[in-house]
Length: 294
Image 1 (cartoon, rainbow, N blue to C red):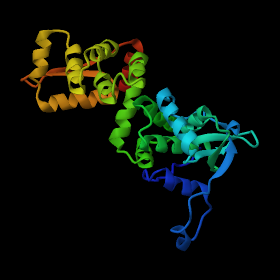
Image 2: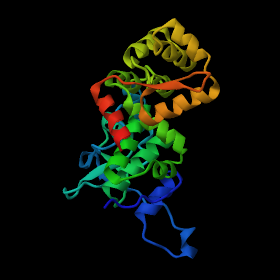
Image 3: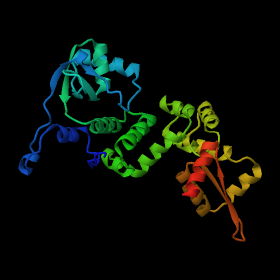
Image 4: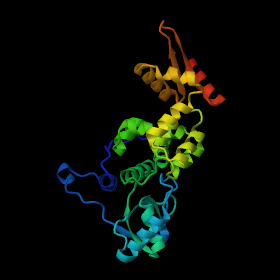
């Protein structure tokens, strides 16, 4: 059974380091205990964590940091844990960018902070540090959250507590993973923002609309308008959508968010109407049928 996530309310990496690195202390000692003392380790003995949510490192930023390290040394330690199954070697928890820059700078030994943590705790710490430093792109952030959910049974509420973000932020970030790989690639490389991408989630042609938004340099608001137009096949239906009241539009959005599909509610003055669920492939249709049967 997965270990129950500890609620740390997004207090930051410095506070979390004290939680993981030091033994229990009395209440009187609690406020006085120090941060773990840095050690040093050979650069060659340190290895990146294959589960680190951050994947993209700017070459220009690494060169700038390497120049600073050559001039002033590595000021902030790399946070590591013992490498599983390999004596005398370490796996990075936080600080892979510093480790990469140190390699470029040509130094052979770096300061480290050594923690004894589980796989779950290591991933949690990596996400907390990167999110609070705004180092993750939206896709990396979403994939990090998904890993905690799938591998360690986190709920979205647990994630919100741990990273110090709202539950709505967590939910909206995870929704990005519903987009096709081509759109996610634009998101990964900064051609689209998270706001642009969210506007495309429930559209029938997210790839085409993403390329239009990029080519025209559209704002998030303009992309939202483009998504609405792109989802409406005929001018008569556009007029009908414009005439819908706010409650109907809100209900469409709520149902669409729950199913991850486009919902069209057509309500007539006599109280009758219809609900249309639009799907892109048989897998989505099968998902809808499964939910209706349950």
